[in-house]
Image 1 (cartoon, helix red, strand yellow):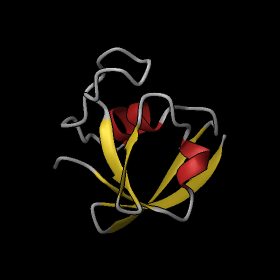
Image 2 (cartoon, one colour; image 1 turned 120 degrees about the horizontal axis):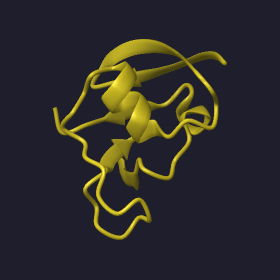
Image 3 (cartoon, one colour; image 1 turned 90 degrees about the vertical axis):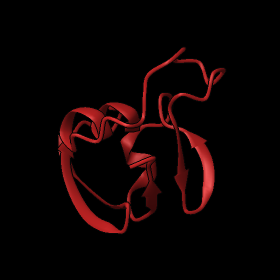
Image 4 (tube, one colour; image 1 turned 120 degrees about the vertical axis):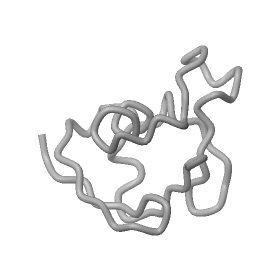
Length: 76
């Protein structure tokens, strides 16, 4: 596990997690941001959609290491 630093909803955060942990699980479990939901887990339904640097992306299949240094915006 290592620290992953990024911005969530305009707030800088640092999360201690395995780099392969899903962004969705970190948002929901570590940061307690429950607005983003788990749906299908295969990028089909859009329940897990967030903005990463202003672009819509699925958080269920994106690992936390891929957002280091980036800006994530959730439904909250």
